Image (cartoon, rainbow, N blue to C red; front, side, top):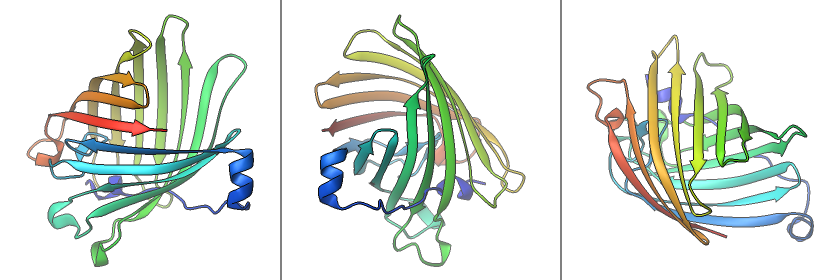
Amino acid sequence: MLEKMWGGLIAVALPISAETAAAQGSWTANASLTSDYTWRGISLSNGDPAIQGGFDYADGAVYAGVWASTIDFGDASAADFEVSYYTGLAGVLKNGVSWDVRATYFDYPGAGAEDLSGLELSGGLGYSFGSGLWVGADGAFTPGEDDTYSSLKAGYALSSAVSVDAAIGSYTSETDGDYADWSIGSTVSLGAAAIDLRYWDTDIENFAPAAERIVLTLSISG
């Protein structure tokens, strides 16, 4: 049921040199330590801590990047790392609605015959109110497969440094079955650093990686 969740993304080489990219766009880097790599309600680190990090490039509406994390899929795969390559377009319409379309390729070096690598296409819409409230919705699917994922999200900025948010998602697949996940959490921004504390759960029964959990993530970017 959960194998298709571990697919997605596309690697695209920008047709410009590194020197040109630095002049026209901007590069950022990020790193984090999390108590549990949870994605769409499922632990991808078998309930253990994970080290993560990546690089992003943006030039106007165009962006691309690479991100990696330690993983542990147990008997499902021998891979120890997930590497995600992505590119997309994002912007804000005149009415204030933000949009984002993305292609992502998830790779699992060393996975061998049980490799779960694959492409995912996704998109999302969002809107921020002047009061600090924001809402959003997104969806994703794997080309050539029957699985889709969609979610609704909302958040509120309590101050310039503290925010809270919640989300509910739905995974559907005629082959692997369906499930729902939900989360609620708070993020504290400390300049370039951030602390995120989040509760996750799903309606999947008798599957430890989908059990309810509280995840603490420390991150830095710049």
